[in-house]
Length: 600
Image (cartoon, rainbow, N blue to C red):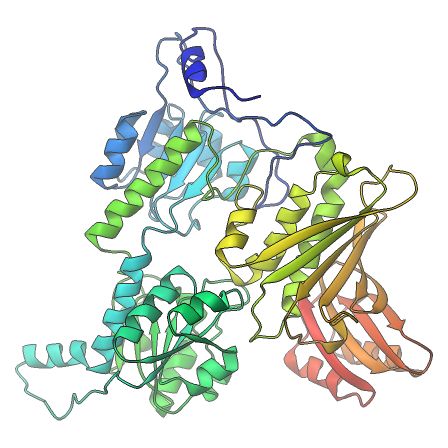
């Protein structure tokens, strides 16, 4: 039932009114969602506060770090705004009990103590920027507080800074400037390189990466890019070729990093990857410091494999004063200035102010990084299937070969329940979460799942498979298929040509039950090794012995085969991540034709 904003505003003037954001329970440390069950009437979540005397209807917003005037003006139209900068943790905890919303940048830690001190009044935390490392998301969800950020306003500023570093590095601007100011005139020493005709590899073709590519094309550079989610049509529209990661780093004269810091991208540029690059490659990083192994970069600079680097971000910020990387003669550095333009700061202020005001009005924006609660009875029933859905998404995307872009995903739900009795939005969101989060810094939930998928050119369709039998259990199995991609593990390709994984819940635990056309049965706990082998005696013992000798504990092992003595797929659940040398030993077993390690 729709209800007008005016009627809610009028109701807020009633002295006895007590409204608050519905309390939330944590589904996981990063995920909490709203879910309608059995045709429940959609709920509008209202966030409001009423003073003890019933007089004031305006919420109070605490601004803990400097915010652009345009954002302040927008907030002042809707709320009582309290600007209090440089608060100590104790002062913040004291003030927060009087506030309905809090806006911070990266310098204020919003930890569990803050949420506990708010005594349930704090309804929204707005992070004026992209990263939310300084906000305790688990505590926010537990205490019923929505968290929103401002991910888009910095895009152009970060792209421009990337281009500025690219040009400054190529022409030795910083080093020449320091030399002249030191009274020297060393024209021959600071001869640079031209950008025209050179190949720039953009690693991470999202908002910032694509803007860097546009500008580099204008400088006459040939631009290639790697990003498993980049829509090919968007890349083609600006004249960019999408390639595999290995091809990108092997052919580039310049490499510009624009990927998030995730477990998959941590130290993605390391001794091994530097060794695959052209001698004399130049590297720019305005993304996240942790994507580069900084010690390995110093070694690559000293050896000449990397000619120069230009860095705006570091693993530790600020870096140590005597850092070999910072002090290196062929490295240009800036103190995390990617978003530091007057225009970007105003844009961030407006974006976060709009998100906070919208949240206080009960509007859940796509920039929300957590969401309303799941009703307890629905969560209890669906929880194992929610875990299964996310893990199937994570498995499927890890099976995609590096150069393939994930564009089309089909999800099938097999159930004895009528379609109206099975709301799959939560499951779809979790599959999207599993597909996107391993290579992204986006937190996917019910609020932003479809939006996030659309932004990345990911089309996810669903089908219901109606089964005979008792509808006591909500689902019999979930199947995820990714079309039009190559696979790291050829056996994961089904007869119809898609990567296919299927799973069930058994005794409350998610299980992988099918890979491609092979039936398996392995618990989705820890991580998994998949091996295609010639079906012959002793294979389980051989692989188990290799893992045991390396102190890797095997939790489950299952073999699915097409026929005796033909081909089989062995699925092995492991508690620890094996070393590369251990995995190589498995691959060297003569009867094993291919294998892949999948991290859950």
